[in-house]
Length: 221
Ligand SMILES: CC(C)(COP(=O)(O)OP(=O)(O)OC[C@H]1O[C@@H](n2cnc3c(N)ncnc32)[C@H](O)[C@@H]1OP(=O)(O)O)[C@@H](O)C(=O)NCCC(=O)NCCS
Image (cartoon, rainbow, N blue to C red; front, side):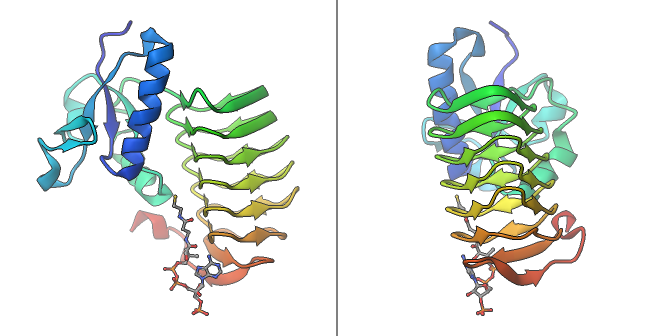
C-alpha cells in the first residue's frame, strides 16, 4: 500500500459522493488506502467535518506536501481552475471507478477521472483526464470525451459521439449517435441533442436549440 496520503479536493456535495465511492473502492482493494480528508479553499470550512471527513487544508497543501488527490468538484469551469492551480503539484491523480460501474472492452480512462455508480461504458471509448461521468450515465461505442468534460446523472450518449474539452452535459440529457459537442458548451438538463453543438454554446430543449452563446474563454474568468 502506498504511504502517500490521499485527499479529495473540494468539500462539496459532489466531494462527499467521491468520498463514498472511494470508500467502496478501498474496501475492495486495500492498495488504495483510505482518504485522509478534504482540501478546500473556503476559509470557514477549515477544520470542520463534512460527512465523515475533516477539511484538513487548502489547495496550497498540494504544492507543500506529497499528496495523491481525487477531484471533489464536477463543474468543468471549477475543474479547470483547480487543474491550472494544482494538477502538476499532485503526485498522483488516481482514476476512481465505482465498483458498481460497468466498463467494457477497450475503454481508456485518463488520470483524475471519476466514473460513478450505475454507469455503463460499452466498448472502444476514450475518456481523457479529469472527466466526470456521474450516476447512471451510459456511453456507447466509439465515443471520445475530452478532458475536464462532465456527464451529469442519467445522461445517454449514443455511438460515435465526440464531446469537447470542458463540455457540460446536464442531468438526463440524451445525445444522438454521431454528434460532435463543442468545447466548453453546456447541454441543458433534459435536452435531446440531435445536431452538432458549437463551442461555448448553451443548448436546451427537445430537440435542443441554442439558448445562448458564451464568449470563448468564459471558463477562465
Ligand atoms: C441550461 C442552463 C445551463 C441555463 O442556465 P442559466 O444560464 O442560468 O439560464 P436561465 O436559467 O436564465 O435560462 C435561460 C433560458 O433557458 C431556458 N432553460 C433553462 N433550462 C432549460 C432546460 N433545462 N431546458 C430548456 N430550456 C431551459 C430558460 O427557460 C430560459 O429561457 P427564456 O430566456 O426564454 O426565459 C440550466 O438551466 C441547466 O439546465 N443546467 C444544467 C443543470 C444540471 O444538469 N445539473 C446537474 C447537477 S448533478
